[in-house]
Image 1 (cartoon, rainbow, N blue to C red):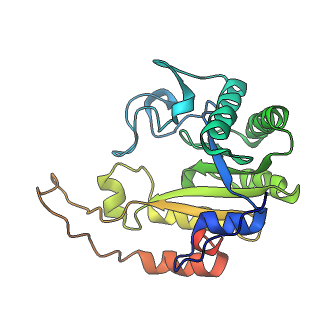
Image 2 (spheres, rainbow, N blue to C red; image 1 turned 180 degrees about the vertical axis):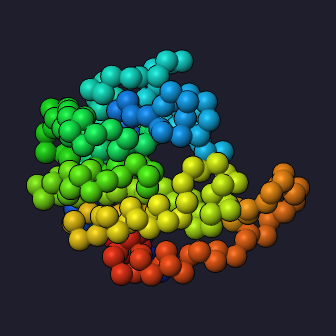
Length: 242
């Protein structure tokens, strides 16, 4: 059943999906076994100051105290959970945990393909696209072309690039492990490929050299953001232009 988006003063990502697909689209968070180059042994200690040890998993990715690791079981549980709770009928595969392009392109293709096949088996005809979350220093032209291939097949493919801050001092402060230039390079690598792109950013973080002062709420001036916004506007980078 098609649902019309509510009128809003805000350009909501969910409303744009509703317009394109005729119904709500739900993201199914999947831990496909990726690692992060910024952690010990890929999934160990270290990483960004704000990152959770498990990289943020959904409720259906847990079975009691255990984390569900099998890809097919994760997809099945995700579909069952969202259908029961939200009556969901359309889905994006959301590769969210860790850095989801941190493998050679050939290996990525096998993992993405396996997840797509699993969802098509579990919920035939319900797949609308995929969202791939990653670091800008884990991207290459070959990986971008791989993702573009899925878009060429008719899937809505989102590349979610982690920026967090446009100031190098702040990136160092939160132990990000890359600079703003790496993000700009990744954004430009994916121009003109038919991908929809978004970035994640932390609002209000400051580049203090010592501990954060108690009670401090005044954000730093985002001096690096003008260049970022120009890229956003020119190449539709960001959900507000989805």
